[in-house]
Amino acid sequence: MSKQVLSGAWQPERVRLRDDQAIDKLDAEFQLGRRAVGLDAAGRKVLLDGGERVAFDALVIATGVTPRRLPGDDLEGVHVLRTLDDALALRADLLARPKVVVVGAGFLGVEVAAVARTVGLEVTLVDPLPVPMRRQFGDMIGKLVGQTHSDHGVALRLDDWLTVNVWTPAAPVTIRTASGAGSTPRRKVRPARGTTV
Ligand SMILES: Cc1cc2nc3c(=O)[nH]c(=O)nc-3n(C[C@H](O)[C@H](O)[C@H](O)COP(=O)(O)OP(=O)(O)OC[C@H]3O[C@@H](n4cnc5c(N)ncnc54)[C@H](O)[C@@H]3O)c2cc1C
Image 1 (cartoon, rainbow, N blue to C red):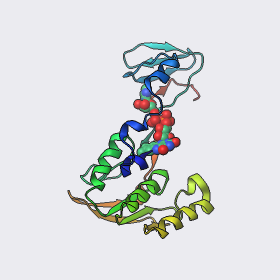
Image 2 (cartoon, protein in one colour):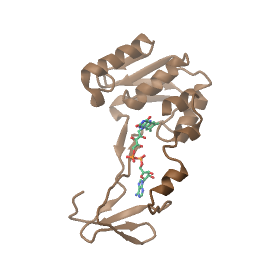
Image 3 (cartoon, rainbow, N blue to C red):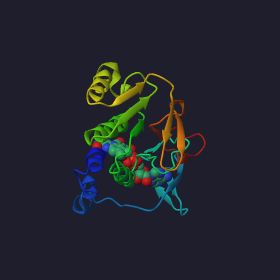
Image 4 (spheres, rainbow, N blue to C red):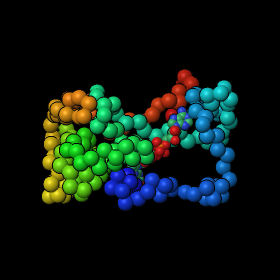
């Protein structure tokens, strides 16, 4: 979806997976704007930020992932891609036709590299693993992905713990891939002692 938003093929509204009517049909009770802050697994209750406890028979923890951050990633011209707003901000910057370095050759990294290259930008894709998307697809498919990107003019800097210097509009940034890109699970719900999740 980010591909279509980044390239401008889709308006942001189109990324909604379900409309209001479909959500109403679920007949589920939503507690939006509330944060789960604790879990009492033995008592089968989730603690919300207002102090309220919600009882359950079965519980799914689906708190998502949070992007790994790199030093300097808050500077102008450096983007972390996770939300729709992130994608729109990145799109706005791509319109200025910068040289692009993409750190991380997972799903999102190869996707952003492909979009940036499709609109004619100079793109370098950096990852310490030897082939793109290795964790998702293994070496065989990963090599094909890398070859396709290479054939389309994406410069690949793989298989190395690299230090990349990037000159952003605000300041030079040194990126060490050893710091890692991608995402890590959010762990904001703290289970009570002795709970297995
Ligand atoms: C830019 C981008 C493009 C993508 N494009 C695609 C695509 O085209 N196709 C595809 O299949 N996947 C795509 N993905 C991946 C997809 O978005 C994720 O796999 C999916 O969002 C994961 O869903 P999730 O429910 O696990 O986590 P999330 O979508 O991150 O949802 C987690 C939710 O938990 C809430 N939460 C966090 N902490 C708490 C708490 N303590 N209490 C209560 N709630 C909490 C968060 O506010 C959030 O609403 C894309 C991802 C990105 C970043």
